[in-house]
Image (cartoon, helix red, strand yellow):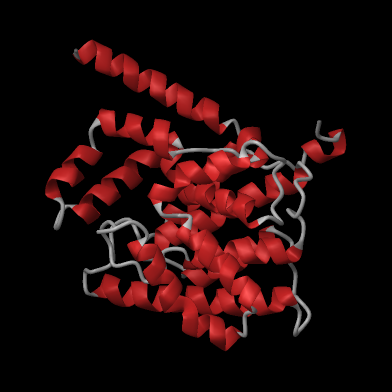
Length: 287
């Protein structure tokens, strides 16, 4: 049970949808920049101004350096018409916003670790870097682009003086965003209490933040079409299949998995079920 005084602080899906819509209004021509989105997410989690030399301060320095480089790279590629249609700055912004909502809900629900500054800071850093300098397209082998992101982040980790433990946690959670690892990650945490101080639970929250915008009806069509455009030059057949209702059904049933207490509080399984029922009904009518 949630204490009555805390109910007013619980974020809602309506608020999340509004935040995601607000991100899209200036995209891409009047885009304020990914660093601003990162700072706003930091503020939303009440992480404040960390003391110099503290763990949260180290992570803040690292996170800022990541989003600044992603913004520079994305703006340069956009000017050349080469920024990926899906794995772009807007996607990183989506995941930062979704993570901030999941963490805020986790805090209201008193999930262990949710209100620890180090956990919140780490979570935002992971989302900032999980698709670092993504080339677009899909992995040729499991974990290819995720491992590349971890490798490309190493100089920034060194410059920020991240500890070995932080490096390992970042790498673990980024690698967990490989679609091939999602189902096993959720199965691993469902039989125990959810605790964000445990890296496996944090990885699940990262996976949820990664695909949350693609799950919501208000943003899913736009994002599916963007991913299809991204795949089209190298995988035209797969790009066309993405737009089929059968593919949406597969995504909802096998990829859009939600196990955290925060996701449950948002009713995301009900959101999925409504879409599944609608698509199934449409397919029956076409049969």
